Image (cartoon, rainbow, N blue to C red; front, side, top):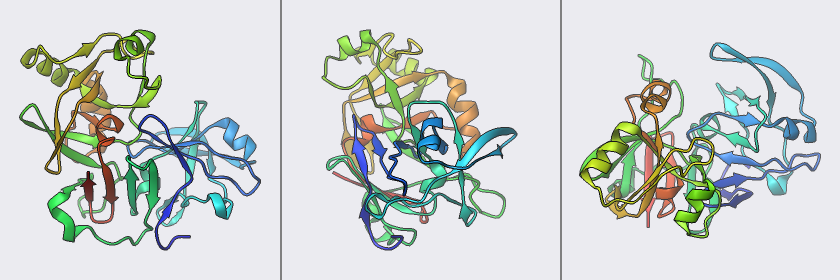
Length: 291
């Protein structure tokens, strides 16, 4: 299954991809395709798939962990490979699992937001270099020898006349409050794909553009606001409108930027990616955007 292109078993729900592989014992795993996240399994999934758990270390912290199962051929997804060996996921109590940056690493993928499909092109997918007029460069944190420390992609977009650095984040999620749902009035789901922006840029946008729409207390758990940006330009395409969710500066300037090759001001997720079919070529550090 590692050769050729295959559409993976997945649901497309409010501009996010929920991957649904079926383990050999018949249990279905529900995992968010999240280029900006780690790899996580829920305790329920571990139990249903009868996975063996062990204690492992991620950074300086210790976690209960498990390897992903083998899958039925008709509901297969690529394995998690880290350093040439099967990798393991952290076990966390949450609503769904996550397939994060380590799962996407060194492979080629298409996130087709029009068809609602996630396509895997294999580890040796063709280079996009010949189509670079609609490609943007993805940048990764590297060590002194030019080897990537991780696979968190940095991407640039132009907003309000300014080039801004972002995490490319297909899993960025907004849980909308009752007040937010009422004011949005768009028949969208409570849990949906979003983009994130730091407080300092959020407030700069508000000062420059007082006519831009802002919904206060739009996020259910935090009470933070969202702002509607009329236009975002990526790969020469200008699209919009796009909702961005407020995040304190330290969320991105510290924790996230520590994993990037330079400081980022937020994340680009489903509320802007919904306008595209995006093929991400991790080996060559390129993303091809199509309308």
